Structure formats: structure tokens, C-alpha cells
Length: 125
Image (cartoon, rainbow, N blue to C red; front, side, top):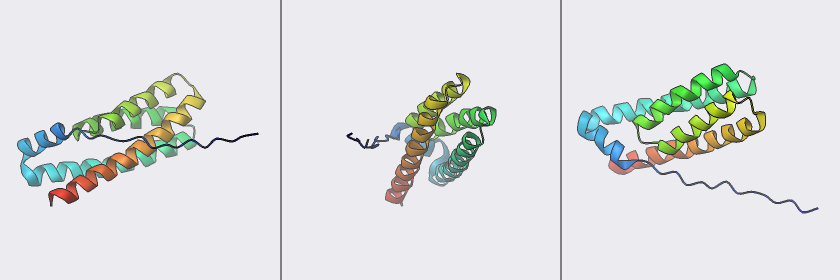
């Protein structure tokens, strides 16, 4: 029997135009404040979504994923928002296998997206 290990190396891409818009609208200090608060909120929401998934609380999971969509879009994390939509869909369809896979993808993309924004902020300082 051959066992194949899958490599999960999905590149994240930030919408730099959306981030630039924030900086123009709010100024550097205001935009950095919004981005930092959004990153903190995304991290908390991803942890809550995972906890809801592990506790079989699909209603809470869907609510958390829907909230995550708006925050991710606000700071240019479109791929994360798209994956959160997929999580909502899988939860609504009551498909545990697909839900488990999309939750895992959400956490991977979320972590990578947060790291990408953090690295981008380090470059701007």
C-alpha cells in the first residue's frame, strides 16, 4: 500500500489596493490601528470557529464565519473571505467531511494571511 502525503502550500494574496485605500482614507496611524484591530479580531474569530467546529456547534460556527468575511474583506484578505463563505456553505449543507476540510483550509489560509499582513506592516515601518 502506498501512502501519499499531500502538501498544503496555498499562496495567499493580499489586496494591496484595499490596504492602500485604507491608508488614504484614514492616514497611516488610523489605518494601522484598523489593521491591527482587524488582525486581532480575525485571530480570535478563527479560534472560536475552530472551537465551535470541535464542539459541533454549527450555528455558532456559521455566525463566526460570516463575521470573519466582513473583517477579512475590510483589510484586503479576499481569499480568506472566500474560504469563510465556503465554511458557511458546508455548515449549512450539513456536510461534515467537506466542513472539516474547509475549516482546515480556513485555519491555514487565515494563519498565512495574518502573517502576510504582519510582514507587510513590518516593511512599512
